[in-house]
Image (cartoon, rainbow, N blue to C red; front, top):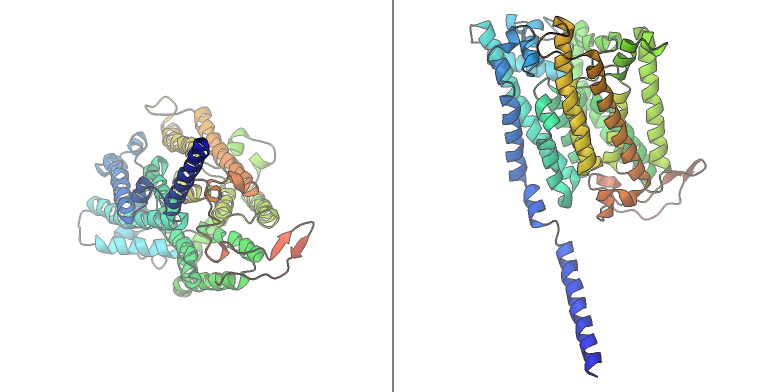
Amino acid sequence: MMDEQARQGASSRSAVTRSSDLRRSDAGPGRWAALGGSAVVLVVASLLADGIAFWAKQACRAGAWNFGVGQYQAHCYTDIYPLYFDEGLSSGKVPYLGHHVEYPVIIGAVMQGAAWAVRSITNPYSRGLQFFDVTVAVLALFLIAGVVATAYCAGPSMRWTALLVAFSPALILSAFINWDLIAMGLMMMALAAWAARRPILAGVLLGLAVATKFYPIVVLWPLFLLCLRAGRMRTFWVTAASAAAAWLVVNLPVAIVAPHGWETFYLYSSKRGADWGSIYFYFQHMQWPGIGTSSVPELNLISGGAFAVACGAIGLLALAAPRRPRLAQLIFLTTAAFLLSNKVWSPQYVVWLVPLVVLARPKIVGYLIWQVAEIGYFYAIWAYLITVFEGEHFPGALSSGLYFTAVLARFGTVLLLSGLVAWEALRPGRDVVRSAGADDPGGGVLADAPDAVVLRGGLRRLPARAQPAQ
């Protein structure tokens, strides 16, 4: 009798404990995770990252920009300072009208705004320095926006993972090389608007992102695929139309007033050969038969064809996976495919990938391995440029063999991450986001939506079922 009472008491205590654990689980993320994902902490972390990135440029701000390979030896190179002079801004020329700029119109507008802000400074070198500082202030704001937007897309229990964006060593090193942070911030805000089920705002922000750097256009392919599978095509078309409208609003006036200046970016991209960091640059250096000796038009076909094949494979994954992949997984895969197949892979392009890696696969080991490869490439490219300009025996120079090892390491780690993300899309039980109970925190209208179209021995439309309100 006593044993039975004891067993009943133990069972009652166990039930209370399980109930308490359940309440704690339902209450949301732990205290530290919640603190790390708070807006205040994320903004402070972003400001700290901005400060470190700015400090890393101090050798150049002290004059290394103006002395040959000194900027490469100090690892502080940026496009922003020399382009102030090369694009005619220092002499008062207006982008597209007075000088043909090799960037889309939002960057041209930021260039002009920063040039206008420093126009009263008489010394041209001091003016160029202040042009850089003003531009950095703008970029810093977009890093904050990108980090906060990443946290929103990650969902309440995973918002702390946005700290991996703010404190990404590779992102900090590359933050102020070019204007890429503007495009990243706009794209991540577009994804946050999509997650909040505001398709028009998402489209407008996406259109502005494409008008800054062209790469965010890849977002439309994953959106199309997942909306097709979930039967949410009306929402997709609203977003795509809003993106097109926003892009036209900022591009058409420039295209009409200065058509030759406006088209420079698009013509430059098509005429550009294999450049630093790309796998084709390696093939070209090694003189591989065919691909390593191809002309620019041939290289365009090879690069475009490789990206098209990768997009086709992503389409199969999106429609044939046992469970609909998360939006962030497919956007990462599409962006990675764009970089892996691209003719150019500049060091600052890591800015594009960091928030997408964090959302697609928030696992620290893979993230750190990739970060090491990106950091290695960051230092390798500047050392190799010393070799190009001054020879292999100049202080700080790096042999071509070591440089291309860094190129292949970066290529390999991004390829590895892509394989892991695709594997987890096929095995959602291995996806840390879904194993925690969430379907797709950044999916917006896609979250918890039943399948409408799948690929099962052919494209099949499934019977209509009750769907949650959009």
